[in-house]
Amino acid sequence: MSELKRQGFATRAIHDGQAPDELTGAVNVPIYLTSTYQQEEIGKNKGHEYARLTNPTRDALEVSLCSLEGGTSAHVFASGMASITALCTMMKSGDHVVCSDNVYGGTARMFDNVMAKFGLGFTYVDTSVAENVAAAITPATKLVHIETPTNPMMAVTDIRAVADICHARGVELCVDNTFLSPYLQQPIALGADIVMHSTTKFLNGHSDGLGGVLVCTKPEHDETFKYVQKCTGGILSPFESYLLLRGVKTLAIRMKQHDANGRVVADFLTRHKNVLKVFYPGLADHPHHALATRQQSGFGSMISLETGSLANANKFAKNLKLALLAESLGGVETLVCHPASMTHAAVGAEGRARLGITDGLMRISVGIEDVEDIVADLAQALDAIG
Ligand code: PLP
Image 1 (spheres, rainbow, N blue to C red):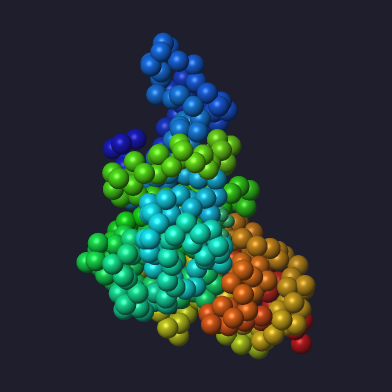
Image 2: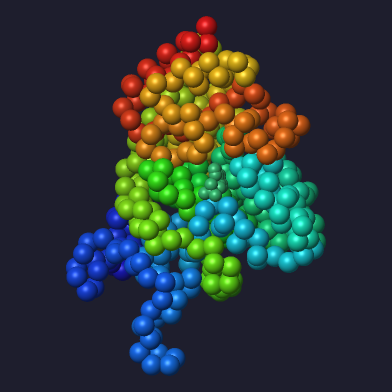
């Protein structure tokens, strides 16, 4: 498949890492359910010793994800949070991280409540203003970690501008690309050193498996994260690796439909009387619309809307008939979440107020059902607010 390597995204999503099985010709990568591998003699094996180190299903997935993000190596972990935990092992006590102030609540919770205990320091800034990143970098800063668009306020950060600021100061940039997937955004091409994903979301696409990945660009990342997989063991299981291999085969076509449906739903929401504000970078009046248009190849299907109060949000949520009230995002089904009580509960009331995450804010992960059905469901649930 190497001659197809630089061909189209959809082709690579189906073929890279996913060559037919050499033994049987099976067109899907087998799920290798083994914890260990027979060795031919002492010190001689077929490239595998123990499943915490390597597993052929997981290896295939790492080749696939590396290709889709345009990196030099990829390392999969048991969840998105496990991959961010692994990312932190690049650093040592006394090192400092600058992070988007509007990241997934679990990311900030882990940084502040777990990693800070080991002497890492964290500063949160609005990275949609690139100068804020420059101002927050100190001599101890090793990493800038951003999410774009942010969760749930959909602010967009200029990846190239932030990468330039980082590189001028010898700092590395990691981009959480979960919301758009490599189909709609290519952070490494824009200068990022590392891309991370909660693969639980669009990459898997079917809400049936947790996972996380770090896609890297340097030999030292490859060495570090391979070693971390081996030493800490938070690796992705063969079965979930298989689910992801299957999921990414349809990533291109799913993302096209997510993007198309997202645009229609956002437009509909702007016209509903019970929606006070819509947060979606695809809308012409979004403050970062021009940047999103330049930096992304679509706007995706993550949309937040302001209903005005917790009571309104709850009426909306309770009246949904097709969309599901649930944490998470990126599945084929439309999912609606209440950030204040779900993804951003850990941020606290004060933190949420600072970020603009009100009790009336709802977030929609628009699925790939027929868009008329999605709009009809949202319309009747919004009408129920009164
Ligand atoms: N990053 C983003 C943007 C997320 O939305 C999430 C989870 O919602 C995570 C990271 C954490 O991923 P996981 O739930 O797979 O651990």
